Image 1 (tube, rainbow, N blue to C red):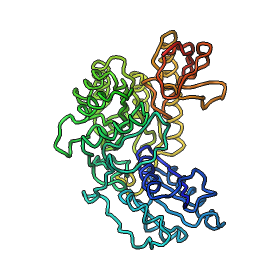
Image 2: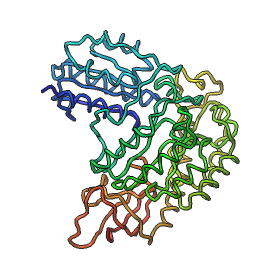
Image 3: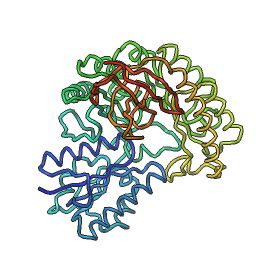
Image 4: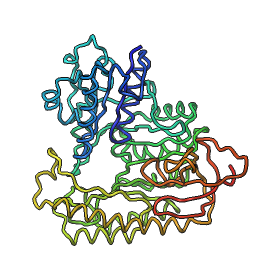
Length: 451
């Protein structure tokens, strides 16, 4: 039995592609291994979104080709977004790679892994202009790499947004939704496998179903998934601010299994920068949106992301962003410095911001958010919350950890659990009542009381 080692980089959407490729290989009789040292074939599923991600992907590819040079691996396959952006350059510079497959060639993994197959014969699917059609479905083999109780479900692929900083449309193609029934059936299958939390992902989840002529399809999907008995939590990631409908908010508020959580990347708070980003809106319109969200879904956790150092961002623009964050008091915030990416509209913009200034602005914003986060966390001390138990803590083997509804895996904080009833043996994936006893900047500390 041939062994295939996988390196999956980038976002959860890329991870789902890796899981699908692993599933197809496993079904065909390959053994999937976590170690590249004993793999016959190494697959590197790359990210090509920003410079740091591209460099991480290149490093992983070079590590894989070194294994081949040392005789440990016989075949190297490079997949994913980096291939879509730089296929010709990669083919030229990395002749030791045996096959390159893009984001719409996931189903070609079996051909690419076959050492009798000439990878040059692979058909290259063009990306963009609605020519890319690949979507996996409920029948597609899949080997999950997430914890047993959590799974991602990709509800759509691609993106049609014109955001000036983003290269996703050129790597993933036009926006296209999966069938409603396919998603529900996949969720049912996952629930039967013991999954307690499904996380709906897409480049723009809030647009789900629009291309199929459906109105408020995401709201209907949330309600339908909330009817699956074995599931505990339904979470939505990557919602676009202009598509936060009342129906969507009502579905979150009224569906018991829908976590009261909104992941909505806003990117900035200044009208000037939002216009340059081709996002539109103003600080005032975004503040009204935040107020509407909180009014419609009381107690909701809001997560967002921002970019500092975008071309044309002035000191005044940044100060407005800082005031926006102070005023809105978001629960969770991620901040990235601008990455100048060729092929995007922002690449040709004047008035570039010095990377050192962009980094200083990022640090100031994160420092302010840490204060907000700790203050919000302090308000939870003394309360009892439902927590999804996840086993030993990443911080220490002396602690356990779990997550509140308002904590998405890996990107938000955790509940660190330091006590529980004597003789109690919690199970990974179960939900318990936890009393919060201490607040940290991003994490909380508590004790399990009961189921």
